Length: 46
Image (cartoon, rainbow, N blue to C red):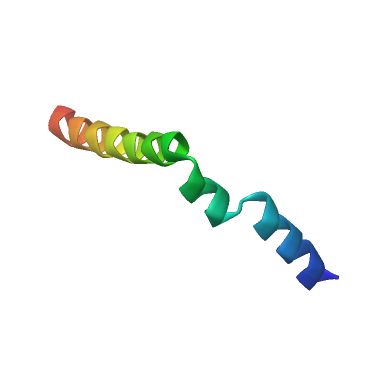
């Protein structure tokens, strides 16, 4: 039961789908950069 649920979740968030969607990939990269910039800004303000 747990194994079949896990495979269903893996199908929903398929890495193949993400790789096929360059905008989603770029969006994830931009979010990561933004998180880094915010963390750096927090350090400077403290």
